[in-house]
Image (cartoon, rainbow, N blue to C red; front, side, top):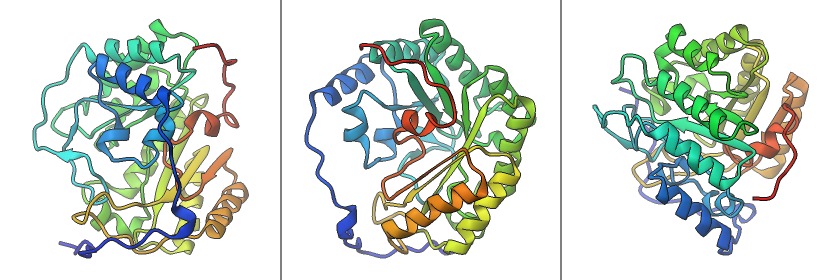
Length: 302
């Protein structure tokens, strides 16, 4: 079993990574709507550093199928369970109601991994997309799905529901998969993204990684080329931040200058859009990121 790099102390954040996020009344509105409909967000469960900023803009990334994951990725703060709770059939409608109340033009929906389910929860994703379409027909939908263990039928179940954006993150370079994503497979994730594009070329495909886990910059560049060979449209890259002392260590802090180089590499590789920066996360400012790849509907009053 590979040894996961863990140190007993937290490194100090570099100066460029420090910022102040004042409280905002709109973040309380987002919180109230999420609570009212009994929803789970990755913003909370994964201890995202951007939560307050996004919630102040009434933006949240909703997480389907519970708050326990069947995988043990060493970067992630979501709780683990071998057999999480059964799916709640009311969740898609509750999600659609919350998105309507928030007035979202662009909704991002993800989930935990549910390897305990024969279909990985793919029909639940499809039901959520359909519910959002009924309640908010003008809202664009991005899904960020698990790999469904590579099963084409389950991937195509989500594709047939016609999300506007299909996101599946590689998370890191292939060499680090045994320590960072032990139950995942790099090629399996690439194959998923390629299948989405073959099945419906109109769907924007998207993937992202974290840096600071032990990768080299040359490995990041090769990963970009792998994604483009599999016809991925949008790429995101941000700094890994350690949720706790029990998680994978931060091996390096990538400088703003290097993030600018990643962005240039993304343009050179041929992505429609590359979001690169210390605080970038897969769904961080997803609406703004996607504006360069899909046509957003006009803004309306909330």
